[in-house]
Length: 125
Image (cartoon, rainbow, N blue to C red; front, side, top):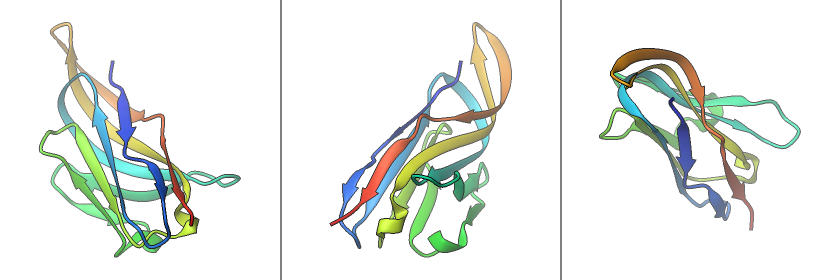
């Protein structure tokens, strides 16, 4: 079974930076696309950024120039470098993976989509 585990959230002052990481557990063969979403209190979950296995990235307009998404050295990791943070960036940030190929008990599987539990990011002075 594949699980996504986020880390790196916390409290940061406005204008500060924070780096989030996400790793998929299990014996991962490949992941088509990994992404970050966020959900602020009282709001719907919104798209932040995505990156394909070939490195193609896409960002929500409000994050362009401030956030950078990247894949780790391992195929099962994704990072989100956030800078110039604003109080409006306060939210729970979720990791998402689409097209996860993995092996378990010597058999191969393809998981269409997986979500992490989320990590809290609070931007406040």
